[in-house]
Image 1 (cartoon, rainbow, N blue to C red):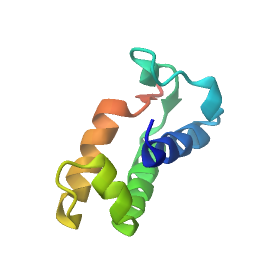
Image 2: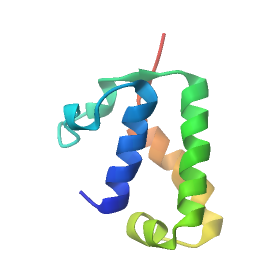
Image 3: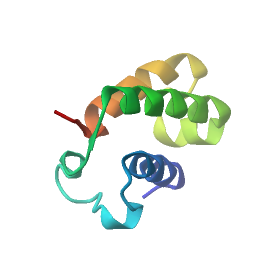
Image 4: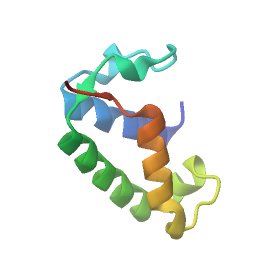
Length: 88
């Protein structure tokens, strides 16, 4: 797993109160194992956007088009694909 992806997953885990090492990110559909609120997801998205804007290395590692104009689109796609499920 890449350096920056690990940092992002650690942050996701921290926000739902689960230890990073307890999640098997190689397991199919691992993102269904935890839940977060809409507010938690929005806060995480804001954090991820700031993180990517501050790190060209992270953008280059994770994004196909690493310029700053594509960050919001990447964050939305990332959360749609890998974000935790919503609490009911």
